Amino acid sequence: MRSRMDSIVSCSEVHQWALLWLMEAEVLKQRGAGCPCTTVWSIVLRAAARMISIFAACRDLSEAPSQTTVFAALEAGLPRTLPVLERRLNSALTHSWSRRLRRPRWQVAIDWHLAPYYGEAHKSRNELYRSKQKQGTTHFHAYATACIVQYGQRYTLALTWVRRHDSTVRVLQRLRTRLHELGVKIRALLLDRAFFSAHVTAFLQEERIPFLMPVMFRGRAPKKKNNRKEVKKTLRWIKRQKAGWYRHTLKNAKHSATIRVCVAYRSYYNRKKRRRGQQKLLFAAWKVHGAPTEIRARYRKRFGIESSFRQMRQARIYTCTRNPHLRLVFVAVALLLRNLWVWIHATLLAEGRGATMTLRLELLRFKQLLDWIAQAVTAQLHDGSAPCVVLNE
Image 1 (cartoon, helix red, strand yellow):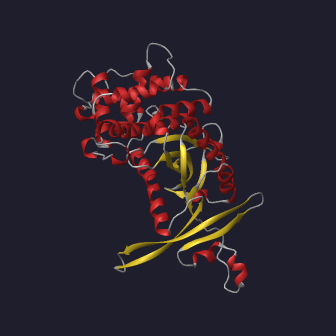
Image 2: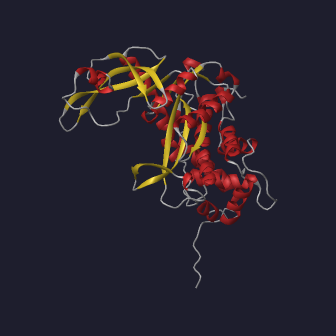
């Protein structure tokens, strides 16, 4: 590998690295010489870099094949079964995952990403995930990801498509299997409040995985006439206590799990009242220790995965296809570009290593990396003529 002191990163190299990750994972097989895989992936990368559709990416390039040819190559070359497709996409995401990154224990954040969907299912209604109304719909294409939240190493390590009949435990099992294949040692899982349930906590305790997640209150608040013994058994009694640790048992029809609940405070500024206020935060934990302020600061690191989703939306391909496999590929390409950006900064542009690493994000912003990829594809598949509109009289 080149020295960090004299590293030069060009747009053609960034484009070639993205192609290399996709080609070596064998996500797409060659289906004829008319439209090679490198051309198909270049068009997909340009659509992601410009946040446009495949049709617009083909239209803007004079030497590119048509949209129909590109979609036919994608549908014919992608694996038929979902497990094989997910395995190859995850292999492309972790192409740069080196052995030295397997040594330490990492804090891993797991979260859902809901993409609103307004059409009909492709083959089965189980393809669409139902949730609370958001952006005018209750139907979504849902994806779950596992991401490292360490400074300078925020790689997305695993991606899986979540269908309607998938339970949270089944999704965790698929992500856990992928992390185990990579040899990732989990220090603690930072989960979203949607995972707060008895069967999830029981599964994580059986797997001996430490976790930390916010407490979710379900059901109606108890009436004031209830006696103190009944109120003490609920989480709402813990919410009224001062900062500290409390023990609680989650129960349902099949599972029972004992956890520790941390009560912490968050200070904020209320702009309407123009004064500072405090908010109580409750965290469910197992094999995670520390003062309430340390627990709150530790969970705040989980919001690094929200940054990965925000950057993923900056490289989102606009599409109206109903094929969920193609939609999964487009999401994986956006996450791959973000992983490539993290890898370039960690290996080429950062100063120092390990705990002394200092990122220099001003050298290459994520939007600049996307612009470079678009320029490299344009130089490869365009004749250099000025864009114009031809009117047919």
